[in-house]
Image (cartoon, rainbow, N blue to C red; front, side, top):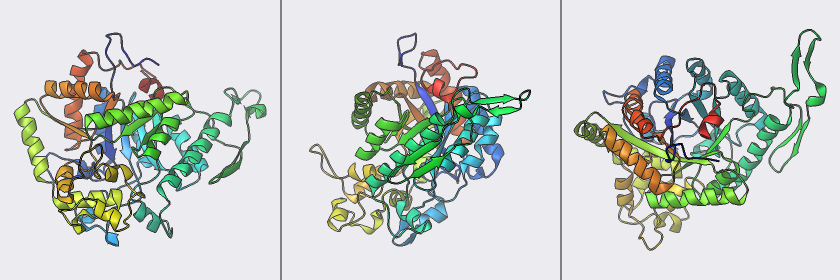
Length: 450
C-alpha cells in the first residue's frame, strides 16, 4: 500500500466532522453571528455544505451520532439543554441520501452504535446507502457514548462494561461483514428479463452465525453494492479501542492530545495491524482550524470563540463523555479523588480520564487545571489559527510529527469555516502535492487508499 504520491510527499486526507444537531465539538458557538449551525434542521443547509466540500476537494462528510446526552447528578445536565451541548438532533441516515444525490465525488460516513439493534438491520440499511451513493459510504463503528444515559433510555439496569462493549462490537462487525461479503457471489444477481431469472440460487449462501452475543441463520436479501462492505471507520484511543481499530478498521480516528502522544498511538495501531497481516489503516485526528485572509483576522475570530466558552460548557461536555461532574469535585485536587471514591472510571470516556491521571513522571493536573485546559477544546483535536499559508504549514508539521494520514476539520462557525478551509487552505496543500487528485467514479474506499 503506497501512501506517497509522485512528488515524494505523503498525500493527506480531509473530512469534516459534523453532527445533525445545533453544533459540533462539545463547545458553544451556534449563537455567534457568523455561525449558521442552528439551521441544522434545514436540509438545504447541508446540501450547501456538501456541495462546497465536493467542489473544493474534501474526501468525506462525517456525522457523529448517538442516543445519549450529558448527565450531571441523576438528571440531564442543564447546560446540555440550555446551550445545546451534545443534546438534540436527528438521525443522519435520513439526511445523507439527499446529499448523495446532490454531489458526485464526496464520501459520507455515519456513526452507528453496536449493541443497539441486530447486525442484519444495520447491514441492510447501510447496503442501501452504499447503493444510493454508488459506493461513497462509510460506517463509523462506535460502542456508544454517554453510556449512563443510553442505559436509562433503553431500559437497562446498568451500563455494559467497557471492554464487554468492544467484545460485542467485534461480533457485530464480524456478522455484518458476513452478510456483505459471503451471502451473494459476484455473479448471483442475474436480472435477466428474457429468461425471467432474477438471481442464481447457487450463488446465494445461507449465513449461519452462533456467537456469544449474536446469532443468525438465514439469507441476506440485499444484493452486493460496489463496495460490498462500507468503509469501516472507528474512533477509540483506550487500549480496547486501539485493539479493535487495529483489527477491524480501515480508517481510525485517534484522540489528539499532544503530538508526541498521538504519534505513539498511531505507531501502536499500525504495529498491531501489521502483526495481524492487515494493510495500514488510514489514521486521522480532529483539527479545529480558524483561518482567514490575514492572521490578525483569524486570531480575532478565535478569540471571539474562546470568549463564549465557560466552566459550565466544559463540565457539561466532560460529564457526557466520562460520567464525571468536574464542578462537583474539589478544584484543587486531581481526578484521583474520583477513583478513591469508587466513581465510574473505566466505564465511559476511558481515554479522556486516563490522560489526566498523570503518567511518565508527569504529575496529574488539578480539576481546575483540567477545566482550564479543556475550555474551548471540548472533544476537539488539534488547533491551528492563522492565515492560509500558516495553516497549511501547521498541517504539514503535524502530519510529519504524528504520522497521521489526515484530519477531520471541526468547524467553529459552521458553513463559514468549511468553505474557508476548502477555498483558502486546500488549494495550497494541493499545489504542494499533499492532496491526491480525485478520480471520477471512484468509491470512498478507493479514494481513501490513495
